[in-house]
Image 1 (cartoon, rainbow, N blue to C red):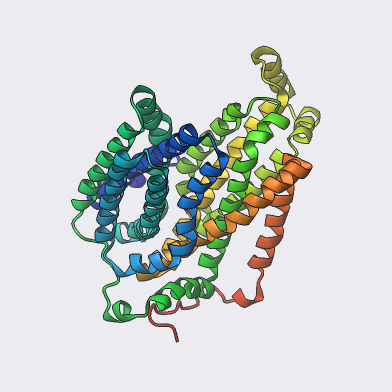
Image 2: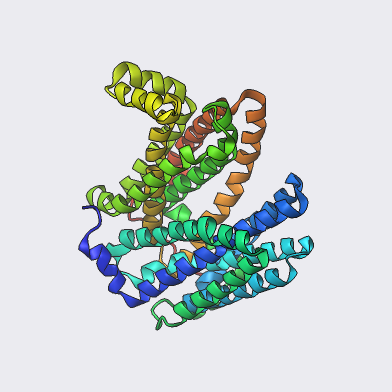
Length: 442
């Protein structure tokens, strides 16, 4: 069994359990809010340009504010940051319920919600090692990711579509405000245990010095640096995959774009398996090797999706899966290409989940607690910033040469970039090199 009794026993830690419960409520509300905003803009305008403006409103604050916001997350007590963040999100949801008919206000409130998240998210991630023991970090991050996945399912698939169908967007935003207030109450019951840095030196440090420390710490610790590199590049590649997926289903799988469930559902199964087995793998091979394993599996899965037709032929010629694949095609009516794509999507979801959990565990282990907000903020900022060029390039390349070649070029480019960053000479410090003490820049 992948999940050990000790992992389940984490839920007896009432402070961590409260953090987990508040995260679940907040994720349900946040995902329902984002989904409803997208539907609202589509129904109001029917314009792709307007949808792009909305997505920019959610993305740009992350690029501009993430790093300095991480410094703020380290200075302030985590409980205060989380409580205030939920209250602000509740106020934004209530404002959307009132002003959802004015697109200018919708864009401004979406940007405000994203800005709040830039301080909130690093503080939430950095709170985990303050509430659990070091040997429980992998299991704790697995629980946090499970809450994220459940929040996406309940918010995107259940709450928002149901209320939009029965009532209207105003009802969704009102429900989100209630959920955010509920999360505020839950996290407010946590009795201490994850305060801010609290040191006079930290409090008096220059704001830009605090922001730069996140980069300095990553530059001084190879394990944290590599975990950030692998996670950031995987996020960028996964977002490019999302952009290409609708046309990929039409041109490669010969099915309608809305039938991307043939890829998404198996990937979700793989992600669930990743949640179960990440703690076991971390115990057996260590969190650092788990990062590398997850990243390599993710890259290979993406490349396999690029050559799925050839992969189908290989399975037919060199494995014993041909009878099963043919059975699905003849009896169920699903083509063998779709069947192979579904099989490949399972390790894709597994690998990305394993990488996400293991990378965060490495950063929890290697980064001083008083600086984790900055480091997680750096990772978030890099994830947003590094995603923009691949998104644009993937769209242009897909129109020019097709989805499979575009995705294959993106995967190969990722391999080259990550190889260069991994073997960079300026990061040859041996493991155990002392980290810089958080404080003013020299």
